[in-house]
Image 1 (tube, rainbow, N blue to C red):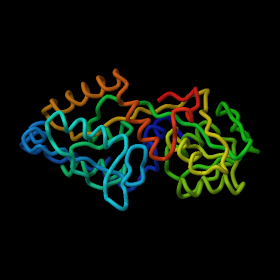
Image 2 (cartoon, rainbow, N blue to C red):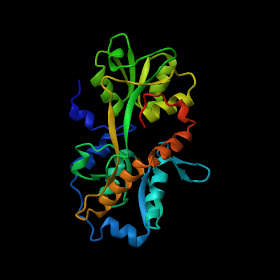
Image 3 (cartoon, rainbow, N blue to C red):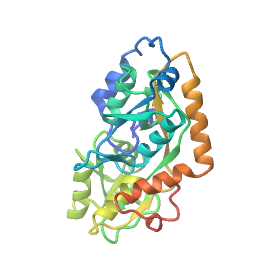
Length: 283
């Protein structure tokens, strides 16, 4: 069984890139530049963000036009609009975006879990929402609680090195864990009958069901209800005006339900509609 500390190391919404994470966690933060992020964005009129291809509902890149869309793209545009600034995109990954912040390549990294190790090298904003976890089963397979999976006759698929694997090994250690390299392989394992279900974060699970009608339904897992905060990452610097501004921006947009609207629009990229979301899923 993995410890709570190990659970905290996982990335939101996707596999943990262990090599990149390790490098980011062991390297000390670089010396802060003379110009603060707040001053640079205000004066330069450019907001640089990490953009992650194929990570809808957060990020989606149109192959034909090169245009970006998704929840975090709309969030970035709104933040930049406060300063009459434009958004510049650096293609990255969850793990590498931490390094991109440290090396001053970007000003914001979206959709990161504020793990203790990451907090040693970057700062975080307030959570813009809590990321829940559940499972997608084969047709007819049902589970409401983790204990329903915690039996030797249940085969649970998960992608290696992800929050999904850590959760599976912690909350259903008696199941047959089918650990595979990618989420796509896990979904195929369920479709082919090699596994009874796959552990997925809410957004990934809802998208998988919409894209693969041969799968069963997405179901939240309870007792315990696993939720990880999803935040924006920023560079460590003495001037806290950028962090303070972003915290106020998050609190305001959560309060008026604008972040929920951006999330629903991001889910719609993959055909997920509000009525497709189970009533026990909190977004």
